[in-house]
Length: 254
Image (cartoon, rainbow, N blue to C red; front, top):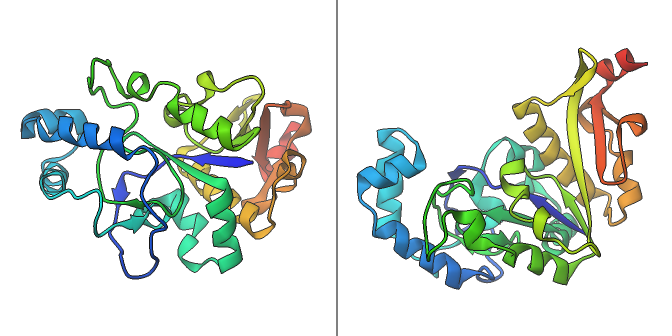
C-alpha cells in the first residue's frame, strides 16, 4: 500500500533533528523546473505564485540561493501545515517513522513524488500553477504519467489522502491493476456530505498517524479509523470511495 498526500505551502529548514535518507527520485526534472523559475522576472514569479509581496521576496531569495543537494530537510519534516501538525512525524516512534518510509508518498509540483525522508529545500510551486515548461502547458502535462508509473511499480493499492489538485496528477494515469481508494472526511448537511477544508486536513494528517501506529497495510482495515470523532459510513461508501462522517452529523442520517 502507498498513501499519497499533498504538500503544504509553508516550509521550514531543519537539518539537525532528522537526517535525509537521500535525494528525490525525479531530481533531473526538478533541476529543469528550477532553471525555468530562475529565468523568470520577480513580477512573473509573483503572478505565478499568487502571493503577497513579502512572500514573493522570501521565495525569490530562496530561489536565488537554491541548492538541491545540500542543507536538505527530510520532506515529511519540511512541510508545515495543518495536515502535517496532526500527523506529527517529529514525535513519532522509530517504528512509525519506518512505516512512513515504506508507505507514505508526498506529491509535489516541484519534486513530483517524494518519499518521506527524501531531502528537500524550501520552494513554492503548486501543482496547479500555470507554468509552461519544456513545451508543456502546465505541471500536469509536464509530469505526465511519471508519478503514476512510479507508484504502480511499488504497489497495487494507492490510498488517496491528497486534495484533488494533487491526486489528479496520479489517478488518470494509473493502470487498472492498481486499486485507487479515496477517503472523504465530512459532515452530513442538507442531505449530502459537506467537506470543510481545515477539518479535512486535520483528518488526513490524523489518519496517516493512525495508519502508522496500527501498521495498516490492508484496504479493509482503513474503515476502522475512528479518530477525531469520525465514523466510517458503509451506506455512503463504495469500493473506491470511503466516506467518514463526524459522529454527531452521522446520527442525523439515520
